[in-house]
Image (cartoon, rainbow, N blue to C red; front, side):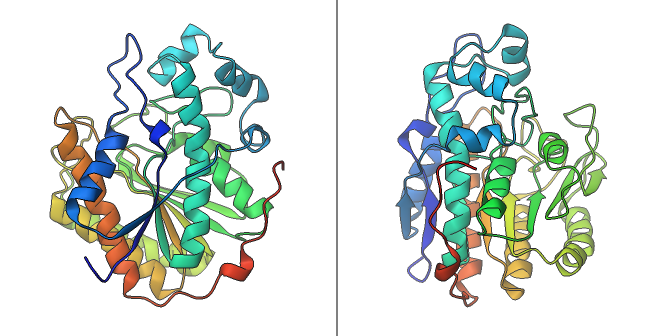
Length: 320
């Protein structure tokens, strides 16, 4: 572990108490940091700022943003999200997009960085959905391009669920490519249209998954030529995941993540990852799976030189 340095974005407010009436738990985000510390990996923890509201409203309906920040989300939207919006949940919903944006800027300097939250890829224009409140991938991508920190962004979504919200919010943009490899019969029932969707049959294993990834990713990287990748690194394709329908092993996730980093760094493309999905009764096991994901990507990135990008990081205005 001595040869790598993991740059990870985390805020104590990522961890929020469980909300009444919901089975969703936010403790995973603290347990991941515990797992990273226990691993012995050398890391630097960066604290994000809340995403300025104007950048969120550049992607989401301002009326919905007001509902979240004023804690007036109606019951039907709260049900679609999967939990009510409390003050703590609203706070972390502003911090998570800020964390993804910060991780992307760190990746431009270090080659790879991780947001120890984020990946809220089901959030739509006027509502959240599927445990997602604001779509940090879409918000961060829009801001990075608007401020000149990126010209073309690939949002690579390898969560077991399709990134329907990201696809819908970024539809029609020539400067953002959305790619989703997911279990076709899993949530959401109604899929959106990404720039590239690859829906897998139930039970696909390590070899089948890697065959699809190795066939598709290099072509997108060469044809679209992104200068930044936001990587939704969900661990829910694992065969033991409670909400997954695929059958990857730990070795399969390892191969997946290393391949993504290797293909990106061979082309000098920085990668910022978000945690995405991972569900099960043993939440520490899920946390270790997320931590291992970050560590192996930092290890892979360390093998490749980093083009000096510090001059391209501009001072950021507070509004779009």
